[in-house]
Image 1 (tube, rainbow, N blue to C red):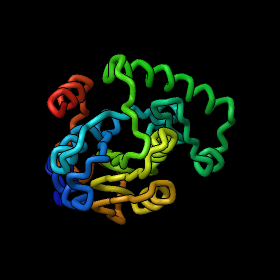
Image 2: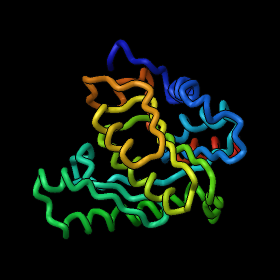
Image 3: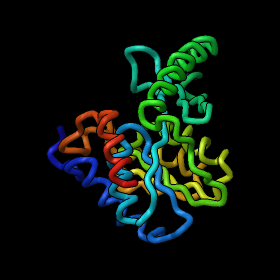
Length: 215
């Protein structure tokens, strides 16, 4: 683990990120969504600081088995699929393989969505400003899928907010979101966890607890 990690844990990252989002404070058209699971503890602190409701967006990365860092794409709530064409072309993956991997993740997305949201539908986001928060960003595949999902709700503005990001990942997301805040963009980015002193996996139970506390 790096000795110069800028964040103690996800809550600390959320508090620091909230400072960069001050212009959205106390707006009555604002929603904050955390990408499940790791983005939710970060989003909880952002929502609290901005005085906004907190919700959860379930996103599943599509990656070949054993190579989870190779994000070939991502799925998000509402049936949205993002395919990272550059990665697919670079490694020569066949469309059939992408479809098979996506189908597997789709089933997991539905299961996780039921675990975290129950039968609660997405709120009506038409005309709203939505801030999407994750704990970090490498390729940006998950965030790009989430942006597409929120865009389809007719939200007025979609903001992507991430405490730490690979510069090229942040640039890719910025092409899709209306506003993008990447708090810290190290040139030597290898993995999200290297920028946290504590980076244990976030459980479904922890997500449900934070959503209940925010409500």
